[in-house]
Picture 1: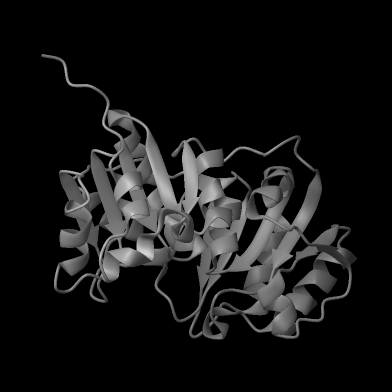
Picture 2 (picture 1 turned 180 degrees about the horizontal axis):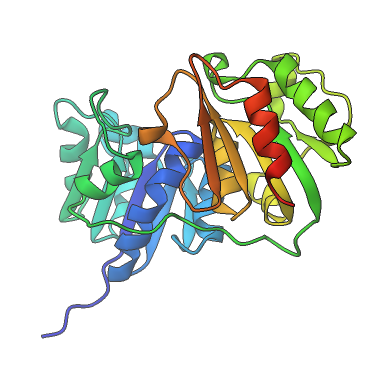
Length: 282
């Protein structure tokens, strides 16, 4: 008897970079049937836009918080439509898994959202390994609409200040590239504005993450830190220069032949980054 398609719900509430590294595992689950995702819709839109999922839900809209106190009727009704649920969230006593199983899905798997501290392979392998899946290619995104042409895009922030190459070096890099005839634009979001980033020149400000994909798909070069936006640029196929300091690129680097990682002690030098950037995208 032929088995019907498996309807899968994936719950992921992590950062942009973590989500994109988890994306190959979501795509692999989709081979069995449609996958829907729940978490932060703006981020999850990347999975829908990239074809890894068919629909995204906000956790509040499905009543997911009730799983920790006693599943609500809303959550039970929602989960009744799924055969499989995969949750990337801490669940030390397995109470979350038990609560979700009580809602009807027969196959419920709950894993920590991040690899353990001693993990020494690429983070994307962690998500695949937990599901018993083999290697998969990096997640790729196409432009949400016509590509917008850009020369160099610099994103100087990240989710943590310790991961940021010094801002004065970014500014000097931009000045050097401009002096060489390159057109530099800055990609700044709410986190960068709150941190007081003051970058002279053209600035890209987009309300949604998917709105950045036409910019990155049409750029000759992107330069940024170990950040979710850097992973997004790499997923768009942009020639990406990723600057690493305290974090390990073996685990956290964006993937792809178009990605170049520079790491120093504690940071790559300005001259090294400038030399690499001046040779990119020509």
